[in-house]
Image 1 (cartoon, helix red, strand yellow):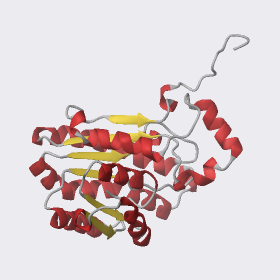
Image 2: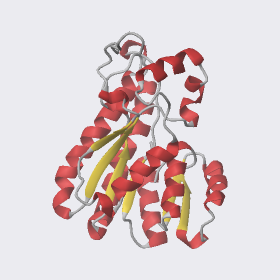
Image 3: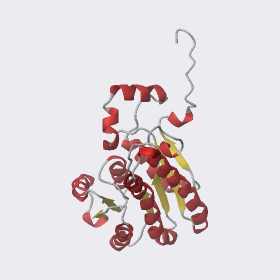
Length: 250
């Protein structure tokens, strides 16, 4: 799993650990990953950790190879890394664009390509963490929208290609989630009022709720689910955005 030191990645690591999995985790912040991994209370032989810049193909490929070396096989690959740089197309620099694509999209391609032969051998599964921002556009978020949309369609393409090899490929599309990445946004009352007005469940999701969806799609309970992008967003993407009509007094 990539980006496992905080937020959704850490919650998914905890969930997989609780279910008895062996884990191979990486993050750009190796020190934070080492610290958080202590909370998993796992046998060190069942846990492999690495510091990885997922923008670098060689580091991603080495992580996959080392994970196989540590555990002997790969059953599930979770691509969780993501990054955003705010701005309209005319506001984004080349560096902004390449950073977002490198973290959010290229890392998925490189990890899937490196892991696929191992997943074919185990008839395993891939779960990519996309976003509802890959299902529609946001204001001032062009690079992230493009990257996550590409992850979703790459997921579908790989599901078609790998299905004959009995490898399932799915994605989750979180909405607003209470992670460090959204902390500043969630600290702004005016912003949260708008979110609560638009999300039918009227709250942000938790990392544990996203992790539950990831682990479900990775599990045998989802053995006939392939090529889906599952929104986990409190119903936000179900709404057209039109005003809600309520009878007087309601």
